[in-house]
Amino acid sequence: MDLDIDAESAAFRDEVRAWLADNVPRPALPSMDTAEGFAAHREWEARLADARLSVVTWPAEYTGRDASLLQWLLFEEEYYAAGAPGRVGQNGIFMLAPTLFAHGTAQQRDRILPAMARGEQVWAQAWSEPEAGSDIAALRSRAVRTDGGWLVSGQKTWSSRAAFADRAFGLFRSDPDSERHRGLTYLMLDLRADGVTVRPIPQLDGEPGFAELLFDEVFVPDEDVIGNPGDGWRVAMTTANNERGLSLRSPGRFLASADRLVRLWGERGEPAATAERVADAWIDTRAYQLYTYGTATRLAEGERLGPESSVNKLAWSGVDVELHETALDVLGADGEVASPWVDGYLFSLAGPIYGGTDQIQRNTIAERVLGLPREERR
Image (cartoon, one colour):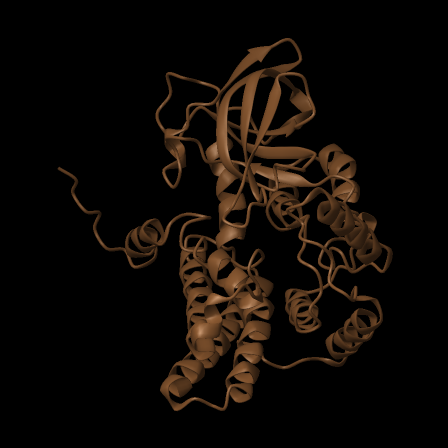
């Protein structure tokens, strides 16, 4: 693990800190799960892109900075410490983009990445189905070959950002007679196309953070297939590893929450009943930071992110719940009143589910990381 910060990275961190101090919106933007907030977050993405801070690890030709993974981690720490807005484009930036870099064509990258970086095209996920959640290989939505492309039919649910997004990416079964993990094709779809119905799904706060997507023979051109038809499972594992692994939930998010928790504990009179839990939450967050720095070091040395990304997923989903449960207990009865801590707690409860449930991650770790035998199912 390399914990040294070189002069170039330190200068980059200082530049980011200064820019955020001058540009983070005050007051905070409206919720991105409203039409007004979604539009405001698009504009924020454009401001980041103008400063070449939207996608710092991307090549310069796509408005990036060719930043190292260490520099990206520093960027994330500064971003969350400054209380900057949530990233409305995170599905595309942190999940689809790495997939395009690994499996897409140059034409696809040239066509898609610049608009993604600026928030001009916001992407939704089209993975889960009513009978295919963590077991995504059980999906039934289909893609049928036609002239110049595919006709897509079926249903996706719990599609994040889909209520207001422009496009979606996901897996569809293109060979109904194939084995479960075969005969799947990875597609990008226009959510404004004929045959697409978007049904927003209100959350506990009444805002549609998700939507149900219905497809009725929606035409998808061949240029919107990522990888080879029928080889979608292999391509999708790149997306899943990035969702569970390094990019979607950086330590910066939790470091900022841990610092807020410590401040909250001090403001509430340092209640002794929660002292050890506050300390444990802070320590667990720092441990996750060090683990991530170790992962970044290995990747910088040429290793690939594989099934061990499930370890990362378990770490950050557990840390998020721990931080917010502790904060609510520090608040006591005040924790029952609507606040950022309550909102954060409700969102944290989704962490052990999305991106593959904790139970699925434990199976993956046991079988593919530790090499334990598969459990026989009767």
